[in-house]
Image (cartoon, rainbow, N blue to C red; front, side):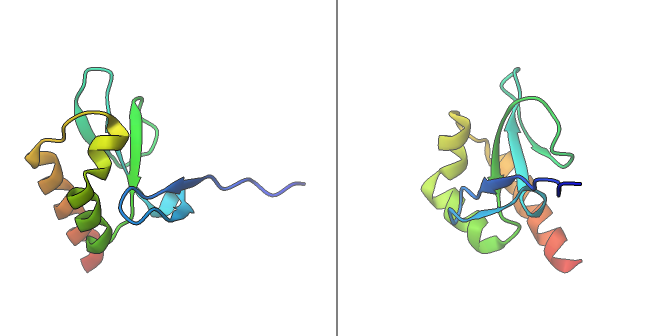
Length: 91
């Protein structure tokens, strides 16, 4: 039996290719709402970011999420993403 293929995605902060399960997915829904997709299965245009503060800082400074999602990202979304990264770092 063949091994199951593991999908790789590119981080918008550092640009490295990593396994999809290692990254946080941020999506733009069809209703133009920006949310963090913890399941990885919601519909919408997705962008991925590493679970580190360094990548978050790079993505915010370079507007990587905004470019990938092709829309402006509200400050509240950046705040909730930063909180999730901080919470995951303390686990």
